[in-house]
Length: 164
Image (tube, rainbow, N blue to C red; front, side, top):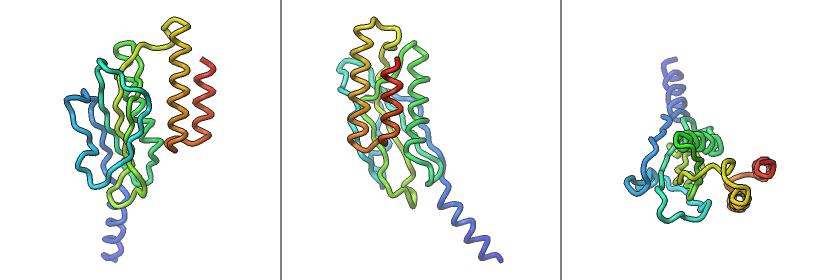
C-alpha cells in the first residue's frame, strides 16, 4: 500500500508545478525568463518595434502540464491590459515568446510578452482608429500564420475588431 501512495505522489508532483507570474518590468532593465532555460521557446514578432517607447516585459507560466498555452497567454494579456489601463492606455505587444511542446517533465506552458502602452484607439480620432484597426488585423493574421492562434480564435478576434 505504501508503494501505491508513493507512486501516486510522484505522478501528482510530475503533473503539478508552481505557477509563475513575474511582475511587469522594464524590458531594457530585465532579462528574459527564457534565457538559460533548459527548454527554450519560439519568438513571434507580433507588431513593429516602436523606437523611443518604453517597453515592458511580463512572464507567465502555467501551474499544470495540462494548462494550454492559450490560457497562459490569456492570463498574461489580462495582466498587460491592467498594467496599461492604470494610465488610460492599452497594451500593444511587440514580441511574444512561447514554450514549445511537448509540455512534459518540467517544460510547463509559459509565455513572455514584450509590450508598450499606447493610447486607447477607442478614444483616438476616427482616422487613427482605422489605422490601429488595420494594424490589429495585420497582427492577428501574423499570429494565425505562425500557428500561435487557431482559425477559430482568429475569426472571433477579427469579428471583434471589425465591430468596433
